[in-house]
Amino acid sequence: MNARVLTAVAACAALLVFGQRACAIDFYEIQIYQVETAPYHHLTLELHSNSTTTATGQWAKEAIDPYQVHETLEGTYGVLPWLEVGQYLCTAKLSDGHYEYAGSRSKLHFGVPQSESWPLEIGGNIELEYMRFQAEENPLTLEIRPIVEKKFGRFMLVGNFAFEKPFSGSGTHQGVQFDPSGEAVFRLTDWVSPAVEYYGDMGAISSMPGVQHQQHFIVPTLNFDFLPELELNLGVGVGVTRASNGLFLKSIVGWTF
Image (cartoon, rainbow, N blue to C red):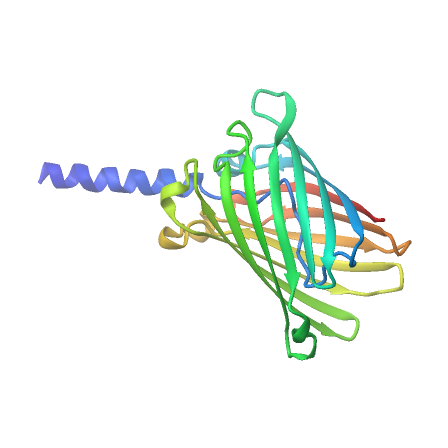
């Protein structure tokens, strides 16, 4: 009987530990992927700036690391009218307080041209992350992200359904992780489009933790189109669970050459 009690206690403790650790959204690139790709034979450069301003409660502080700062330079090139390739160079303020190079990522982003006449437009993004151990718990990860999109006049809805498989680090043996995200955009004028973005990290599909141990953020944003070549996205993220109880600031500044 004592052995059974000890086993049960150990199992409960393990559940608590793994539940509190888990999830963290990608603070190197907080962006919703649409079906549209970079213009054919054009180069686009983007600077992603993301910083956490507050984290309230022990779970949030363990999961989102208050006052972290990330700057990521992304370059994409339209190799076909429906296909782009991209490369990321990521930087971060690490746990020792130093601001350093954090790693790189490579991506292949595409749209399905035939889907323009379908009820839903369809695309996808395939991304390989090879980060530094000091900056990322799972340095080598493959992400496959199906994309669906629907336009209703001035409204547009976009869904991203990312599946990640770590190949090194603490999440290697937990299997595939599910990170949904999406946005609702309204084109208010020719130069501004307010939106509400959503980002989530639900953890490993095989052993998904409870909702309060997951991360879910609602992000009101503004998208500005002052010039055809310019991309400007500004937003404030608000966590809605105990593991994401905090705020972050995000911005994307891009230019198409």
